[in-house]
Image (cartoon, rainbow, N blue to C red; front, top):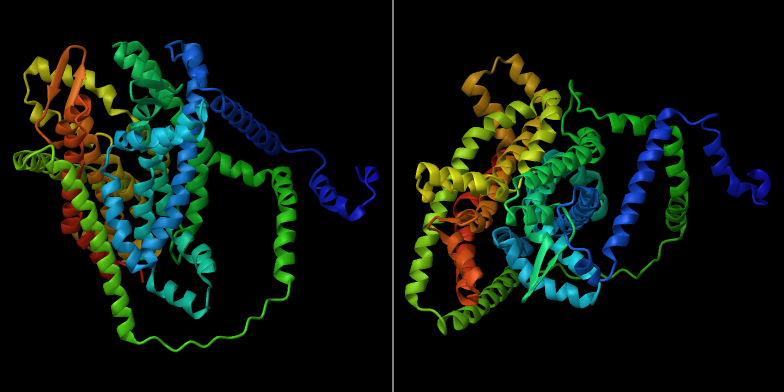
Length: 588
């Protein structure tokens, strides 16, 4: 290759790449094949997404097993695209909420509301917008489905990152300020590394949570037209509509295969990589392992090739840094009076209050023309019933999963074995359980108000487990060794080591689980299978019935009351817990 170029300097990176070894190692070959396969699958999926919208009607979703690999690829691409958008949202919005008290006043309540708004509620308003951006193309409907999956992933990740930024150890924060880090350097060198271990576990949970709503996101209705996108979710939707349990089992099996694949190829290597960011002063005795992470570290050709391809960007950054800085005339502004800050805070609070009052007035003017105070009282009582279910279910899930999560988090070897199982259980769609729930309740003549309730927490309880595992994994090894040296056991160990270590993570998981349970109540309080229909008295079934009847006023009233309950519950319980964790349970 040197002889084919007249520029000897340009060939030096290639020569260094060729001199890394006489022949590629087996690790290089495996890494190259994996990267090539991923690239081919991504290109194939992108081509399918850009086809005309009429192609969906020409080739509707069928239960042919030969089409299942294509459906699996389309669903997986949608979920990873939504995950990328969720990460961008997390890094911007959660960071802004953690650093700005004024922004926090708006962002945190908005996240409380958004995590409780049904996914179908987002689809109602976004499908027309995205289809208008790409008329006649599948890309518009694909963007609507990706956005719907995004709404089931982003809030948990944002809460996790926000909690991590608010609990950065005081000594690390002080050192970064003494070194004069710029905001970007502080973010990349302190905040992001410190939040990475917890964020990785919440990314896995969000990915699994996306499966919970993938059925709704791939079957999109616009007016009287229904567009069904090819995917695992649409496969399950068709199988459930036809009451074909064999096809349901095949779809769930395909989902399990996908989860195991991306666990081994994506999340397991990321967990092993993120372990180096744990906050501790002694080396961890047990580190998470990943065969792919070890393989990529041994792949010399692949590593050299990536460095060669990144060399132009590195050179550009160095050239930019070598440019003489632009000297602007120094402008000395007078130090603002302390009263000015109080005035700005007051103006900001006034603006927020006026905006909120305007929204309440618009909602009231819309509802008062169609509903009465009796409807508001009825919906409020139904909201109390759903609130009681949420409180009881979150308490029971905490009693079960907190001890299990601590046990798993303190044992990396077991965490590796149980990680894909927990992801599969978290991804298991609740509507697949409807046939068994309906058949059992009808056969045993059970009370639907009680026995439909577990369906609400079936997909959201895993937020508690994953966050507790992340919290237990983040407990520094030196703290665990000190506890062992002092002989802390039993309740004393839980009170002085485990509970303080996991408490901020648990609050994030329980808050997200409670918000997700409100969301899931819409499909869990009113279930059907064949000719059997069961209903539990609650706000979720009220919204579900109003949506089926097309009663927009009652849908708006139900969502508004649900938002009020969620904000009030979070402000009464979870927010004080957050503040307590920030004040008393920081690693210092």
